[in-house]
Image 1 (tube, rainbow, N blue to C red):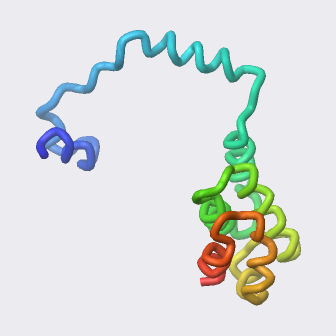
Image 2: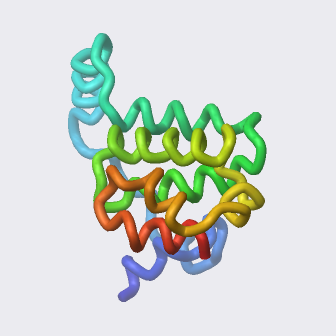
Image 3: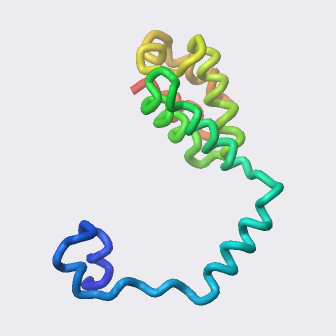
Length: 128
């Protein structure tokens, strides 16, 4: 319990001071450089999803929209969750704000997220 429980303590907590900082794994820099080189000209669906989330900064009700997008991505490919979120935004007039979600019925939300796994449950959670 000693070493594991320190992980959850604040950075400058006295109980954390007793252990030295962890040493990085050998060759970590080479591995990181290899990953960066391999992904240099490729993107993954998770990259598109993260770009979408970052793009919400200037959107109305960005935290709620990010929460909804994240909820839709559970047990679902990121590309599918992104399609579902965009369909939901379109169905709600351009943004999946709390007010917009409250203004429509459950069937409209369920229809918009119908491409996701567990669409009924996710629609219900979005409405709640």
